[in-house]
Image 1: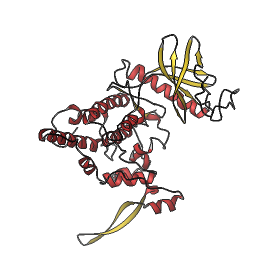
Image 2: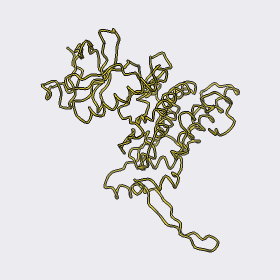
Image 3: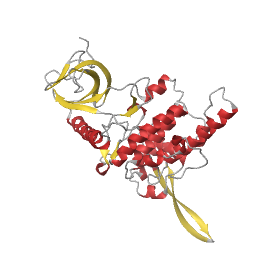
Length: 386
């Protein structure tokens, strides 16, 4: 029988687990829970939390994805949170399964491993863009995907749940020939009143408030959505920060400084910014004025004793309007089509500016973003005011 788990040598849990505390799984192994039997077919993916395998459920004769969590307390507890969030979303938030949130069908413990059973889905949006040679998706497809993700986010918003790890890898197509998507991986999710971790969100999609240690809420998912929307359009990540410092440098370079009231409540302010006093003359009266500037890479590294590498530069321009504007048009467009495409592009840029707002209080909610002409198809006549 073909072994799916690497390394495949049994070291713990009576020989059932490998050195990483992963359950060693082979093709045709059976995960059993009372009368429910899941036959292991294939490996779908491995992560820090454990593994995801494709299984066949005997009683319902359907294919499912089973997330087999590592036999380690921390991962077990985090997965219990995921179970709680999904139960809430599947039964209360989206009982009719209409809002593009993955369905959890079952969960159980097998050989000391918590197992979560999900509907089987297709490829993720990162794989889709990669398959497209990192060329970016059409405006139409982008609109279809972003609308559905916003639909899921508005349910999360109403339930006061933060996903905390929204990125192209965590949005899956339902089938290869379908435009329907589902948001997956609630393994980092939390209820808004229970924000515990300061180190959340995958780096490229990490919001300024999480970087700065400013109190965060569901608005951080909207930031990630903005990063994702830009990436799906451009084919490459908008902020491919190689370190947290590099990430913040890129954000400030592209969108400007976070507003003073955000900096005032940022617990990590000193980590990234240096306070400088300047003397201003106001009507002949000298005034001391404080302002902040980002520390340089060298200052940051010296201060923290760590390397803070600067990453790749994917775009010639630094400002968002220029990056979107410089993206090549499809060839062979007529003048009318070109005018239409230009208007769509301006609408898209305005949409991005609203969800990539540096002030989380002002950043659009999912419900506000859903009303934007870029998504509704209404004529775009100028900046959208929700």
